[in-house]
Each structure stands twice: as structure tokens, then as C-alpha cells.
Length: 583
Image 1 (tube, rainbow, N blue to C red):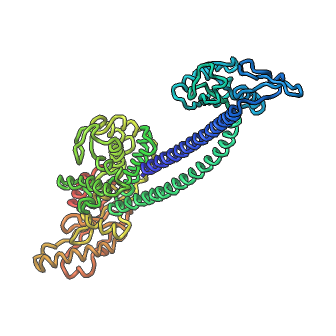
Image 2: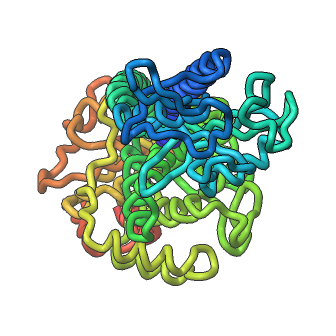
């Protein structure tokens, strides 16, 4: 599930990146378009100026030139070699003929002075030296001779950007008056009209538009990111809700396991926590720690498929029973892998009983074939099994468990995992040893399955194993031995069924009489009661009146009992048999 949130985050990052890229590209395209429009406007202005100049020049040419007064700014054109270039009016005013080129040059100079846009008529065959082309014009006059169409481009001159355009000038009939002596014919390329437009004012307009456009695009981007963020948070909230449900499912599943096998209550929680602590000490990521914790919570969920007669058996398992118990990891895997939210940890659960040397189950994996989280859980599971009471064995101390784990270093478990476990678990507080006696009717029924004598309803001899493992066992001070005599004669006289009924009735009498402690059917017709007090048994009280006519004799004896001197189940049973023989 954590990977699902990571995947969601990755989706968010990708979508946010794509949205940002889209807005960036759109802004870039819009900026490019706006810049192109600015350049187009400048070009249109240049072309308009050229057309105006051409129209102005044509008008003058159509009239064969115009006469203007001779002034300092408009002297006679020394390069104009035509008759009547200079004339005097009847009132004595001196006039000079201004041809199209001279008039255009005068106008260009005035226009440049007033508006900053420069025009220049130029040619490779100069009539007037002032029309000499500059470097850019000289280069593109050659271009005009090849293309015979106008040419324009953006150039930077003196640190400022300009649009330069040159348009071809062709010889027409009216042009021959001034240029025929240069060898031109109608249709020849005479030169070009060059226009230079400063782009500064256009750039200022562009920057104003760019600021407005930037603000609009930034606003759109922020709104889009807000929508994406809202979508991410909404989706993340839904995922976290699923995570919460996942956690609840884990707790419920663990609860199901513990209710079925109440003796190992808390095992899943402890294994999960131990696994997480070891993983943290090994430097695994927080997500990996979370996954191994969740796997630990449900690592024994497959025990749901194991029969009670095997799962709850209070003693060592037979080989066939052990093989059935081992099936729980496969059952866990098959269950978890079918549930989407559990599937990422299913493999970890499947292999938590594998061992480095290949002696584990279910697939006999060894070494690096075993998933690393499974190896961590294997150590945690073994540690908890060692430090928790079992009906058939007592728990070990933390240091005893560490010693046993260390003995399997490099054989069943990785050395670095053992080291991490010793460091991570050395300061934990083991839960106090609680009584294993049943506390609910359901637990009593399961308890009875293993410990109740089916004939009498009293506890069977195997219950001694249970009592021996209980924390209060050493508080017992005496044992009452109760033997029913003449049962064989009773069976011969009344039959085995009546004999069994007698045993059941008497056992129930003892259970009612001795409600505070357990009544155990020891062997055949013998019962024992372990007492924590020093009360001396009353033989008459233990012989009910209904037994008097049956010729069944009740023998009662009490033997002092030092539970501290009993060091094993075998020594306890030996003590009881010897005591029964003596009594």
C-alpha cells in the first residue's frame, strides 16, 4: 500500500511536470508568435515606407523632375547632367531641377531626422558618391541581382537591434533621362532602396505585452497546479483511507488467529514489532519497515486452514502433523496474493520459514534465494517462539534466546541479521507470564478437547504437563490421592457400563466438592488433587452417601509436596507414581 502512495506521488509529479511543460511550451509558443508579430509589423512598416518612396520617386519621374529654389540645403545637383538644370525666373529667382534620386535622398534625410527611420538609395554603379552602399547593402545588392526580389533581416548595430530591408530599383522609361548615359536599358536592375528601422520601440511594446502575458500564464499555471494538487490530496486521502482499512483488516485477521489459538495470543503483533525493529537496525527504509511489520501481523494467517486437533495440540507433533502445520505458509500465501492490498507482502510471508542452509519450508530455498525481509522475519519469529511460554515447554530468557540464535549463525540465519536482532531486541520488555487457563466458554471447550478425560469429565493426566508450565505451579503444597477400591468386583457384579457410570458420577462429585482446584484422573480408578493450602482431607466428606450400599471403598491420603524440587515433567510423574504406591 505504501508503494501505491509512492506511485500516486509519482503520477502527481509527472502530471505536474507535464502541466508545467505544457504551459511553458504554450508560453514559449505565444511569446514566439508575439515576437514574430512584432517583427512582421516592423517589416510591414519598412515595406510601406519603400512603397511610399517608390510612389514619391515615380511621381517626380513622371514630371521629369521638379524645380525648387536653390538653397544651402538644396544646392544644384552636380551629378545631374541635363539641359536647363538651373534656371532663373522672370523675377530673378534661381531654381534647380531636382531629379527623383536627389529628391528622394532629400526626403530620406529629413524623415530620418524627424522619425529615426533611415532610407538610402544605393547602387553598384554610382552616379552620386553619397549613394555608396554600406557593407550590408553591398552584400545584398548582389543578392538582389540574383533574386530580383526584396530581402530583409534583423541585425544588431552599435548594440541595438534593427530591421533592414532592401528593395530592388528597376530602370523604367522615365529613368533613362538621367541614367541612359550609364548604359542602362529599361528593365535593368538600377540598384536598391534600403530601409533601416530601429526595433527599440517595437521591443518596448513587446515587453509590455510579455509582462501581461506572463502574468496570465502564471495565473493559469497556478490554477492548474492547484487543481492537480487538490486531485492528488483527494486521491491520497482515499489511499490513506484504504491504508486505514488495511490496518483494520490486519488487526481483524490477527484477532481471528488469536481467537482460534488463544495460547499464542499476541504472537503476530510481537513478530511484527520485532521484525520492524530489526529492519530499522539494518537500515531498511521506512516503507520497507512498514511492509515487514504488516507481513509480521498476518504471517500465520494460513493457520486458519489447519485443523484444531493439530493446531491446538499441547505436545510435540507427529511427522504427518508437522507436515500439515507447514502447509500454513502456503495457505497464507495463497490467501494474501489474491487480495490486492496484501499481494506485495505475500511472498515475504510464504518464505519466513525458509533457512539459509535449505532446511526450511515450503520450497527448501537457501541463501540469497530467500527474500531478505523473510529472513528478518524468520529471526523475529524464532526469537518470539523461544521467549514465549508454550504448553509443552517453558520460555527462555532474552539472553538464552540470543545464545540459541547465535548458535545458528550462518547456518539457518544470516550473521548480520542475528547481530541486528541482538542489538535491537536486547532491551525489550517481555510480557509477564500470564496463566494459560481458559478464560472463556469457547476456550474451555477447546481446552477440554485436549485435557478432559472423556469418560469422567475430570482432567486427564496430560493436564499435569499444563500445570507444570503454569507460573503458579511452585505454590502447590500437597497432593490428595483418592482411590476407589473394589471397582473390579463392582464391574463383575453390575457390568462395565455401570462401572463407568459410577466413575463419572464420583468424578463429578469431586469436581463439585473441590471447585477451586482441578481434579485429575490419574490412572484407572485413581484421582489426584493438587492443593496450595495445608487442608487435611476428610475421608468421610470424600465418600458420598450414595456410594455406601455399593461396597465401593474410598481411600484418601495427603502427601506433602515441594513443587520447587520438581525440575521436569518426568520427575513430577515419577513422584506421583511413587507416592501413589506408598499410599
